[in-house]
Length: 49
Image 1 (spheres, rainbow, N blue to C red):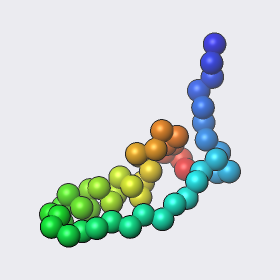
Image 2: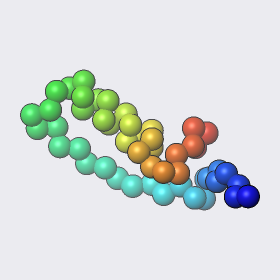
Image 3: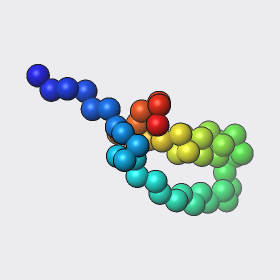
Image 4: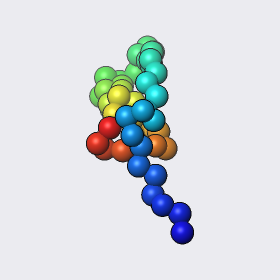
């Protein structure tokens, strides 16, 4: 049986993100930025990281 992967701080890769806000509604932009900052778009997302 495989075990559940739990990332450690050494496994986290940090990247810069530049968001183009041209012709974007502020609320949608804020929501998208929050997802990116939180890291929920990554397959290795863990709440404690």
